[in-house]
Image 1 (tube, rainbow, N blue to C red):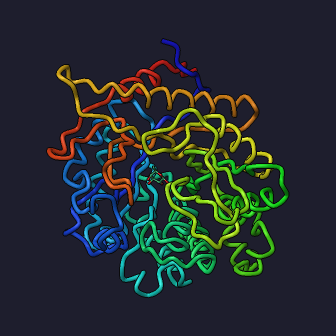
Image 2 (cartoon, rainbow, N blue to C red):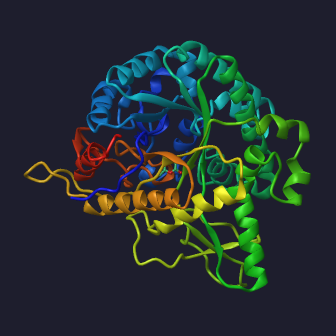
Length: 443
Ligand code: FCB
């Protein structure tokens, strides 16, 4: 078997997030995801993360599954409300990760805002940015002796779009373009958190942003303009402020671009995290045309862009187009757009296939996931050949988990989790990833 090869020092990892795996919801106060999932009709089958995959109680076994694959890094996130009431859990978790010989790479914020902060305005309230910086300070003073690498925020774009502009994720505000301040305040939170982490002695600080190529459905100038605006709102609005100290267009700049904040937001980073899943194709809305079901969430009528299906023969079981070359393309685009781009880490990439549980021989033959991961790793190697510095790649996800509004049907894990018994079983992709890591030349 031939495995894609990466330069010595390249870091392989796996990723998860707190709300999607921890459960043990009664041990802490509510986050916006507890509130959102309790509302009828928000999540497929009415599922929620109260138990999730019970990682809170099974973390030792989970860390073993992660470490046994030979990964260098494990990316997880803190639950803000658990940090408030039960921070010792993260001492235990970090100690277990380190003892297993893996580097912990925690994310401060992966979408689970404390409900009391949401009640005070959530990310629409500037003060939330300062609360996040305080929380960053608490964490670095508690764990900074053992954790070197920190990720501030996860996918501010998806949180803004799905949670504040639309109603598909918590907190489900549905504000449309009026949600722009939620983007700005998260970016400010990132900048303030970078300051707090550095003041607390953090060795390496970065962010995890979702990025994907956006192409117009045709050369028609209206389609090109629609795609450009969509790319601004989903990609560049979250990277230009960090890497250029400005917003990508005048409308956004005029709305939210305070120059003093932009200075804080654009503080230098040690690495830049890219989460990649699929590209998007956009056209200017055609009157009377039905655009529903193209993306995971529907863009309401009245906005000046509409998604059309990306041309791709292959899709995951979540319906997402499989386009590995999109990862190479977005990486070279980032490098061309930002001459000062820090070393990139692929902080998430992976695929949902509806794997059945283990057969009589105990195996789970998820060959489609293996093909997906292999093709995307080749795409990373192609970007490296084109001169982009990529220092690592984390699979989303270590274990099957709660996939937000899609509930538990979508399985992204290298390790299968039985919905009834919560039993863990390593899939064939887990073994493949282990063997790929072992097959790297380390010098
Ligand atoms: C990303 C999220 C992550 C997971 C994957 C599939 O957008 O950051 O939590 O849901 O998608």
